[in-house]
Image 1 (cartoon, helix red, strand yellow):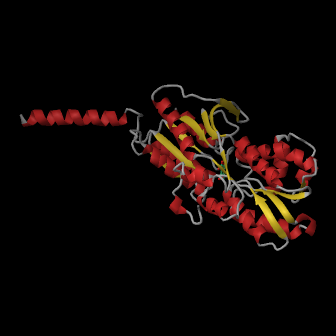
Image 2: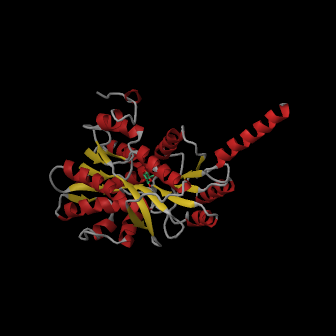
Image 3: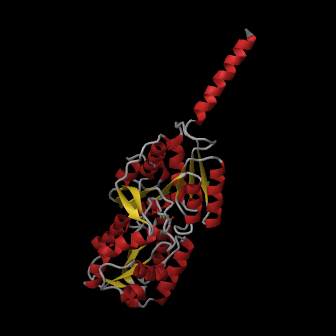
Length: 364
Ligand code: BGC
């Protein structure tokens, strides 16, 4: 009798073990690699992945690359050794990540590029993203809608040239700002490259690269701060007064805003942002940052995990279009973005449950 029970137990246990593994062959079925813990944006993604995975049967692991392509490659290898079937990866450097995902493909893993496109390789199966052109266009449009008069000094800043998104954001912003530079509403304050191209409605990647080379922040708030200081030191009185600033994201927007706020000759500034970072929502409430573009990370996480689960189930994930990555057209699922300023910050970010009201002061 005892023996029968133990045989039964062993049999039952093996069924559980097999069931636990049926999503893949190894210990971890979905590997997630994010670029850095140093920016709240990506810590937010981690938190949203964890929340989404709480009740999931799938085993996942999240690793951070800390702004290093070498560390990123190592992370991918660690996950491959754990037997992942799907890799969700936001690259630190879009082109440098090619070799990491090529290793994954060789291992039979399906690769999903997350938020940032991995470029110049055919080893990317899918891309989940926000509408990044729309992000840049919303930033530029906000400056247009809120600037007064003409001849308004326009300070341009961009993200890292190693991030394909930095090109898309700038391209979107340029599409709306260029006509307003051409008609004299704005005067470019800090980029001779942009000045030289100001009559061109559409820029090539090379032309965008030239401007980015001059106005990049490398997504680093410190670098943004130094660049803003250098720009303001070089600017004459005609480039101060009421100014407009295209800042590519919240982290750089806050440090650029602080620099402009401390210049006595700047009477007012408009400054864009993106990510709806907690600290920037407080800046918006306090009137220190003009706007942000809210990219609901919950949706991006849902899309990425939905795709991963489809792949694990042997189904073809749904896509809404494609992005050329310099090598192939990558099937993509794209999500819309929401423009947030003082008027709708409560409705979009508190009432939607994204943040708690208690995380802010002065919110009414
Ligand atoms: C992301 C932004 C982020 C930036 C810096 C971009 O690729 O789309 O949300 O602010 O990288 O990390």
